[in-house]
Structures are given as structure tokens and as C-alpha cells.
Length: 414
Image 1 (cartoon, one colour):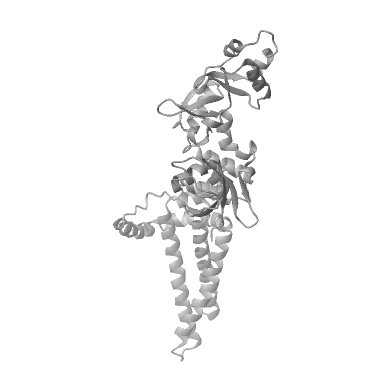
Image 2: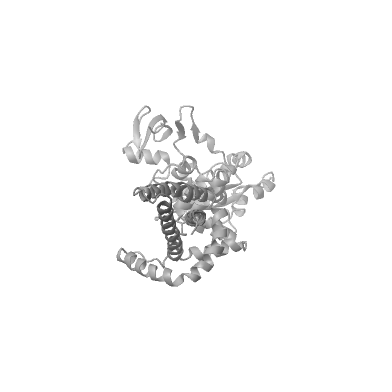
């Protein structure tokens, strides 16, 4: 056989080896979720690729079978060429093997695999059209090889038929959303993260605390009540007698403002306009309560503990704010990043909101606010100037009042 033919065969083997090496990397590094999307769009290359990847053991077996064959054939051809060109040199075979190794490493391994890792779809989809008939042609050999592979893997507790590599849990999905900064605006990232957190959030996490509930005490003079109604920034007000635990209903300002200037307007008129109060257990999941608000066409309710005592108030806006966040309220006042990398944090901010704003992982089980978390950690109300390490975050107490921490500085983690 002429030397030129041998060199032609060697070059062909190098090209085939590059194809098998690159296509293997391309097929294994494909984005599985983009692949599923293309399958839904009826992309023929994606459809064939997905079928091949359903049994990766067979696909890898076929690729390695073909790749090993062409590499071995290339080594044999190189040996023949070395003997033909340098018949008197005993070291020619070793030198040719070394040269072939370097050439294959550059042109048949590193280069095609790097290209495939950067642009997997350009190589994976065309190669699927080649591997599909090859798999049918060499199926008996591939099946025989994979029979022993399956037996070996079963010894270590792996079943190749149960391929769950496409599954993803909630935390992994949250990481994907967080890292997709170039594709998703920050405000939409927070919305998606808020939706993912709905399952684990309860109304206790987002309610307005009892001491912040604004309402009308019917024991007050009617003149004071009228002034409060006229100056109220809220659409609905709780109406009670002496204590919020003795609530008798909610007053919608749109109904009462129509009659407030009537000469006979009195407390009985207010009582006649009240809607029945709704009581919500504090452990109710946010998504469950949102569905209840929708079905029963209500917008506000009182959160009660296991003893029936009122702990806070929750509205439909509070539930929606868990999703849309800063589209309703401005979060910058609660957490302000400083030029030195530290954060000034309002002590009343909820732990869930703080984690969502800063991507931290402060514990959400137990106290619901930063103030509560600090007090639980220190078992006392700290004085300004005290510094502690709060769950891996160095913090300094900046301001407090009689019984709460008002302002905290989170120092950069070194």
C-alpha cells in the first residue's frame, strides 16, 4: 500500500477521532432544559438528541467503541508508516507513537472538546443524526459491553436505567434565577424568588404585628373617631372596644366617608357599616391564605395564635407583596448599603425579606424579625455599640429604644 494512502488513512482516523471526542463532550454538556424547549418546538435534531440521552449508557458505549477503534487503527497505521519510512531505526516506532500522542491530544482531543464545550448545540444535533443509525448497526456489541457495565455499577448501587439527572430541587432553581442577572431584571428575580418561597412562608412571617395595628376604639369620643377616619392613610380600619382582642369588625372608609357629614352620624352608624372580621391561624401557609382570600372575596384578616389571641393583621396586599416586593414598597429604607460594603438594617425588617434582599441565609425558623433574632441570640436587649457575630455575620448595634433594637450595622465578612 502506498505511503500516501497510509497518510490519508491516518488523517481520516484523526478527523473521526476528533468528531467522536467532540460530539461526546457536546452531548454530555447540553443544557437539558433548553433541549426540552427545542423538543417542544419540534426541532428534529433536538428530538433525536433527547432520545439518545434517555439512555446515556448506550450512547457513551457507542461513542467509546467507535473512538477506541479509530484511535487503535490510527496507532497501527502510524506504526506501519514508521517501519516503512525508517526500517533500520528500532526507535522509530516509539518516536512515532510519541508524535501521534501529541498530534491526537491537540487535534483530536483538546481542540474539539473545547469547541464542543463552548458551542455544544452546533455539534450535538448534527451528530445525533449519525449516532442514531450507528447505534442500530452496532447495538449487539454495545448491548454486550453495557451488560457488564450494568453489572459492575449495580455492585455499587447504581441503576443505569433510572436516569434522574434532569430533576432539579427548589434551592437549585433559586440559584439559577439568582445567577440569571443578564436575562432577568432584578425586580423580576425577586418576584420569582418570592413565588418559590410562598410554600414555606406562613401568615405569621408577613403579618403586621399587633402593636402596629391601626384601628378605631369605640370607647373614644365620636369627635376623635371622626378625625381619625378623615386623616387615616388606610382604606380599612379595625374597629374594637378598648382592646384589639375585642374586635367587632372592619370599616371600609369608602362607605363611611359618604355618611360622615350627616347630622345623625354616630357610633351606631359605624357599627352598621362593619364587615365581619376574619380570623386566620398564625401557621396558615401564605399560598393557602391567598387562595382563601380569592375564593371568599376578602382582603383583610386578623392573625390569631393557638389561644385565640390576636397576634397581628394580614391583608391581600401583604400576600401580594411577598411576590412583587419592591413594586409596592421601597425596600431601600429598611436596608441601606454603605460605601465601605457594610449595611445599615432596620431592626423591624423581617428575616425573610432581609435574606431575599441580600442573598444571606439567616435562620427563618423562630423569630421573624431581625430585632427578635438578635434578642434571642443574646438573651437580652443589647446596648448601642455592642458587636456580636450573628450566625456568621459580624454586626454592631447602632440604636435601640426601651425594649427593641432599632438599627443594626452588618459589617463586611472578611
